[in-house]
Image (cartoon, rainbow, N blue to C red; front, side, top):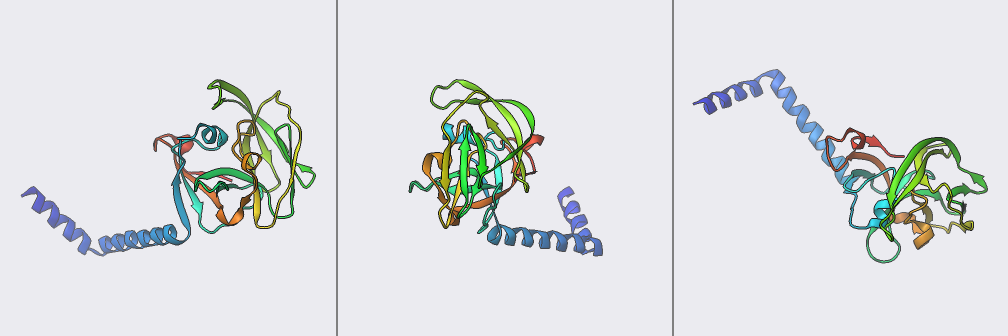
Amino acid sequence: MLALQGASRYARWVDSSFGRNIVWLVAILGAITLLLYLFVFDTWVVPGDDPLFTASILPTLSPEDRILTKRGSDPLVGQLARCLVPDGSGKYTIGRVFGRAGDTVEINNERVAVNGKSIKIMFGCGTVSAVNPVSGDAVPLTCSVEDNGSFSYSVLAHPEYREAARTAKVEPGHVYLVSDNRHIHKDSRDFGQVEVSTCEHVVFRLWGQSFGESSHRFNVLW
């Protein structure tokens, strides 16, 4: 009896002008969302089965984050991108674009310069611990915020690590990716330049492993 009464009240609400407007609004929003998903955006859950990849995406992303990527996009220098690893495995990696066709990228002591211009460090953001996938030990890394003139983002580097400078000129149709974790990386230093046609701009973090974790919910990712 109660169920019938509830159904009757719902029917009267739908028949009302306000109710019809709400139903139409929900239907329109649902249709728009579906079209955006089919033709503009894609969602992807960041995998956690590769310890090296897991460390390389710190401090920007974490395993089990659900991210939004823009289909058919052409990521700009400084933007985060999801690209196919050029080894035929069909797996994706995530890195920041630091060079497009014709650019010269130099990495010296885990700091990046593009066409001879070093990326500006704005300020520090503390210390982040990352697990070395080889030794299993926790490595304390220095966090800093960089600004390339268009985008700002956080990166990790080892305060005492020194390495020989690496220089690469980006080939046509390719981009040079650099992990936000400059010390424990999975990027073009490891597998070379990637085809830009396999890349999509990472636009948004929808939520993290737990939807209720506010720091990993609805964040714009440059």
